[in-house]
Image (tube, rainbow, N blue to C red; front, top):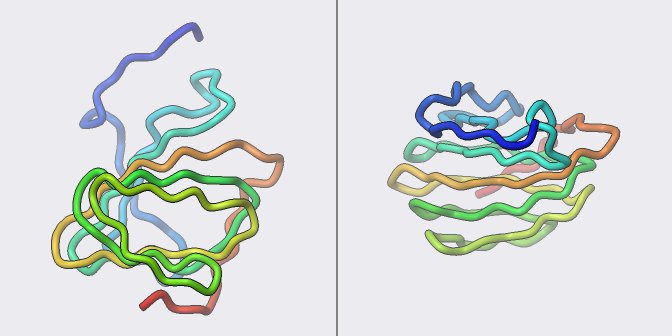
Length: 125
C-alpha cells in the first residue's frame, strides 16, 4: 500500500485487555496491515481509568494530547500532561493512571517478533 487516509473517528475502538486496566480504550490507526514497520495507536482513558502495569518487547513513544496522568515506569512515578511525551524501552515495566478528566494519547510502537504483553501485579498509584 502506498498510502492510507482515514479519520480517527472511523477507526474501531476496543477495550484495553491488560489485567488491572479499566475504562481504557485503544484504536489501531496505522499498522503492518498498511505496510508500516511500526504502529500508531490512540488511547482514550475515562476519568480515573487506568492501564495496568505490564511489560513487552516492543519500544513505545507516548504523546499526551489531552488531559494529564501518572505514568509508572520502572520504579519511578512521573506526572505527564498535554504536550508531554515519554519513550519507554523494551522490557521496561510501566502503567498509566488517569486523573480527573478524559485522557487521550498517541502511542507509536515498533514490531518485534514477539508482540506479547506480560501483565504485572505491581500497582501504579
